[in-house]
Length: 158
Image (cartoon, rainbow, N blue to C red):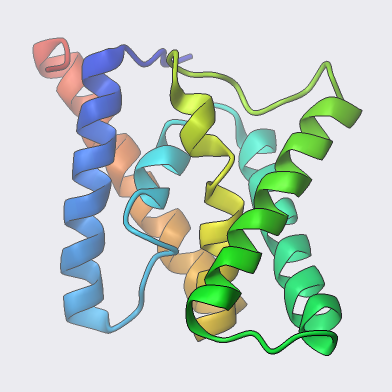
């Protein structure tokens, strides 16, 4: 099982951001936010964790768009804030409800990024749909994981 060190985390985040920018420029499809592919790449050795992140993301989308949107007008920053807030609440609730299972804290401090990821994914799902968001995010996360793994094997990370 691949274990990330701090240099690998930096490489994963930077590679994910750069790949996301190029991918979006070429295809017009946004892979759920710039930091998401790098974060998901660090979970590739924990596939159940990836499934949980996407499950929470889909649930966040449904709650915001099908429940909260019935009671308030959501657009722009308000919608984005609602997605992030609901995603954070659901992620923290899941971690508390299932104490033996939470997204692994790959490196100290990554938990802070991990709680915003479902909201970022949900927000992008709302903009461009489930399939383009999920497929592009998983594709770029896989490529990012490959880059980090190759870097670690060849040069021992950054």
